[in-house]
Length: 262
Image 1 (spheres, rainbow, N blue to C red):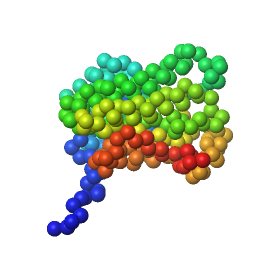
Image 2: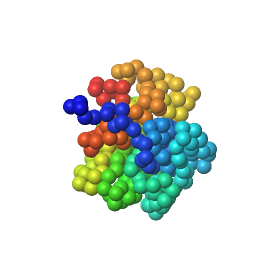
Image 3: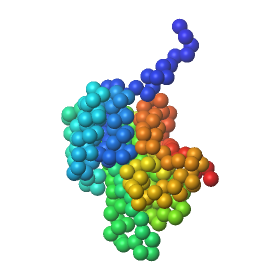
Image 4: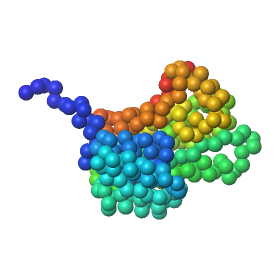
């Protein structure tokens, strides 16, 4: 019998596990939900969108032979999140993985920003992550295990040159420290809580025609000289959600093309 008693590919296998992904109707959240299914998980897909985004996510998940349900909910509403977790467990099974990707971005000079603009973004990006984690952890703690991955941003670590988004930067810094704090509170309950901090990523918002000049600046400022594809956020998330990261908690994983090195 070999002394090397491990199976590396199996560490990334999510077969038999149930995941909940917020912001699953578009962008990073949508791709992560599909990636989790491709690795074997059944996935509850949550978003407040009213277009066909969630339907497209579900179609892609069922196409790989996994179960999926759509949940329309607002991450700023605690009751709707508690109900979402209950629905996930009732229809798919015990919640094992959660990825909190719901968020918004906009910009305005700090001296001109309205209280409403500041508060709305904070409610979604920071309070929404807290309420999502709280609802998810209350289920996972009962099972004695679970993995939560929050989508933060490199903007929570650095200040982006030329972008006037004090509220966004602050919200993502809050997500990073929220993640670390919850990781320590729940470590004895068998939960791991980590964060992904994407750099400039080619989401639909960043690739609009009117963004072409700013996109060029993003690429020039990044050591790899390009933005990330949305798909490049899937692998790091799967790693943190899987047994391959069984000794990782409280981690903020920068996926930024080297941006924060300079």
